[in-house]
Image 1 (cartoon, rainbow, N blue to C red):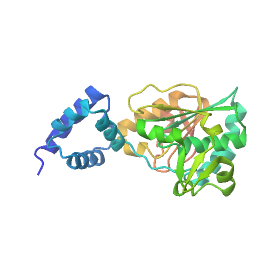
Image 2: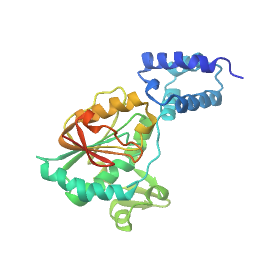
Image 3: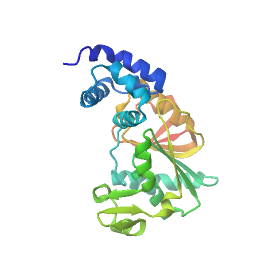
Length: 262
């Protein structure tokens, strides 16, 4: 039996925030605590204090820990009907209002399926040179996978056959994204809870991530997203992340998944 782990958790969250800049208090406590406890047991540490001492001096362990607290489940054009709405209903509106390149941010992009889906859509709609995509995630290791852009067939189930043929090179059991799509995307590490948000985006996509945040964490993220959009820009979120009072953030509802900055 591991002594005092429950008691030590609050102290652990404080020192992690103070020394590592990761605010665990903005994630749902029950889920996060269960994950971290399981990880500590697996690594054979006795207390949170012992674990934290190793976390500060072991870069590999820190990368594992960051991977643990981030959610990396993704696929190309996940929930395809919502992407169809983006391409057919939202994108024409954004293009009509745009004064140059369309600026897009894929926030918490995981291993790259989302920003590459955006690039495939944009190539089809406007072509190379007319858009710029920023793709960010908290975890460095997952960003490296995104830059490589190699995927299993299970991650590509919602792609059409035409999209597979025109956007990927088949390599045995995997598929490699074509270089032209990688060139259109800037990959960068970013913490949604603590880091600065760039401004002036036409479209921000952040899906199926904020459900793991506390109410305060969600509030902070929604406000920062709203501040990062240009007027008339659109925020595209996940199916379980409906914003109950969008006007509080200077947003208006287009439908359950799209919010426009007023």
